[in-house]
Length: 105
Image 1 (tube, rainbow, N blue to C red):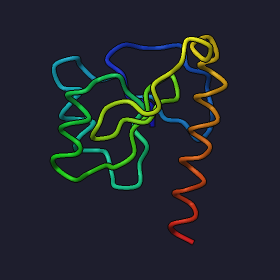
Image 2 (image 1 turned 180 degrees about the vertical axis):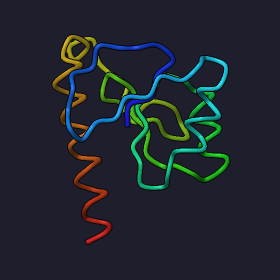
Image 3 (image 1 turned 120 degrees about the vertical axis):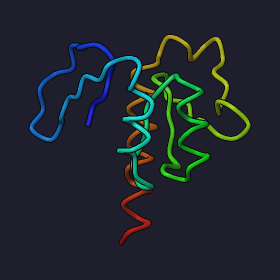
Image 4 (image 1 turned 30 degrees about the horizontal axis):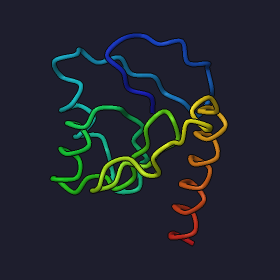
């Protein structure tokens, strides 16, 4: 599910549901919909803190392929890797999905 406060130009995929939620309600909507095995991709630190506090979700990425941990973003990006966000994001997302699949097998 893709949830945003504005319509974004994400490509249509049969497995992807897009939901546009009012800006004032987006945090509560996501926190009510997120589950333990979901991967949340966000830049919103407030949302991550909310989801961690209520124990709803444990997997967080930003759009540059960095994982959100209790210590912040990991790994910090070097100057050399800053232009390669898309490839890094796809790689890290694949790793997260494979790890989730392994833990349920």
